[in-house]
Length: 159
Image (cartoon, rainbow, N blue to C red; front, side, top):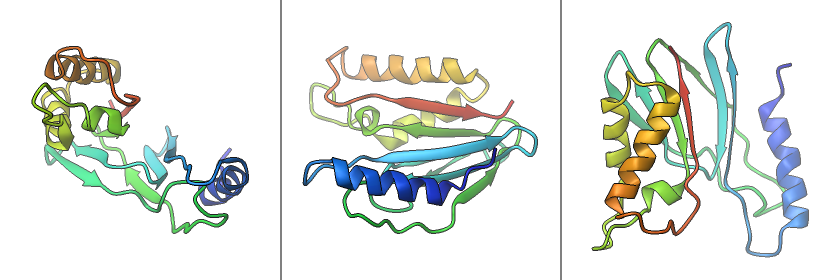
């Protein structure tokens, strides 16, 4: 099945706009990986930054959201979906702001650069190990303080 990602998001947004209280919204990322072609199609509604490690270049590209979060208005600006060909060793990371905004005792944020550097250092590891490495580093950075926000991590890695 190859869903129409923009159409699906249009319907989800319309329902969220009808159901959410005023002033509430939801950031979302929706992706589909074709295992045969190794193509990742995705669209981000307010969920950013997204991190794409290009293994050949050994470089992390920081990608922006495509549009604002879902539920703010009854219609949403849906441009074409993004497409990335996942080459061997490439990593695509969808990470909630609870990771990037995790603060240490001096209120310094963990930040995008630290996560990007972890992806480069851990790129030979499995996707699950990369998640564990990020979580462990955030916990060490914050001295195991309780998270102030959700800390969701999705790692897509081409082996």
